[in-house]
Length: 233
Image 1: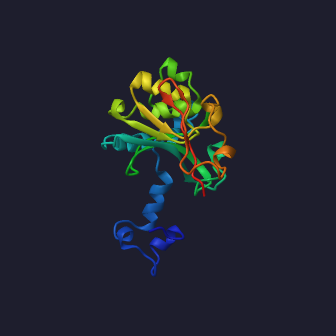
Image 2 (image 1 turned 180 degrees about the horizontal axis):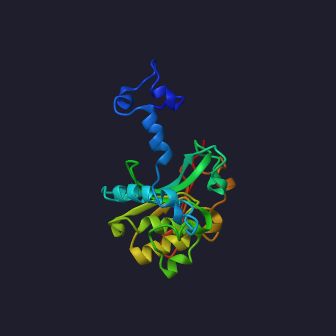
Image 3 (image 1 turned 90 degrees about the horizontal axis):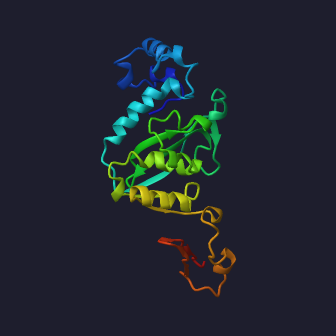
């Protein structure tokens, strides 16, 4: 339970025995002021903009990866809400998220919502600071595709897994790469310019009353189908 302020946890009317019986407010503040997760003396020489908390995130992720994942994995953006002014351009904005301002993470989760792996977005140094390396062919992929590959490479049974993602990540090149190199399946929504503008029925055509409910249009490139669907309202 989160209180309006730190003092409320020790206040007479709102005290929480789970906290106050084990630690005084003075001791808590001392620990809070001195708590470090990395050697600050080396921070200036590091390109990792999350250097000060990297060991914490690495430790958490290491434990997450030990939990058995489901064969279906979802990759998406997650916002850690932050409205302060100390984050610089690490503070991102995504309009359709519950927390619109904050730190942007890219996460891979199982079908039950359990997160197994995390990439902390920090612009140009996102991948150089992440512990998973990309091969030369993977480095040539789009930024969004590289995020999928970095998160996919920590899946224990990638060959028998299916990755689901939205149209920010999807491209024909990514789907083919996952299939050819890792025998991994991929399902996702896609932007027309990321899939070669296939000859699908236009949105206007599919929304016509004359188009039967549930109509499918599915041109394919090789073994990669591109499917459009309409639901008449």
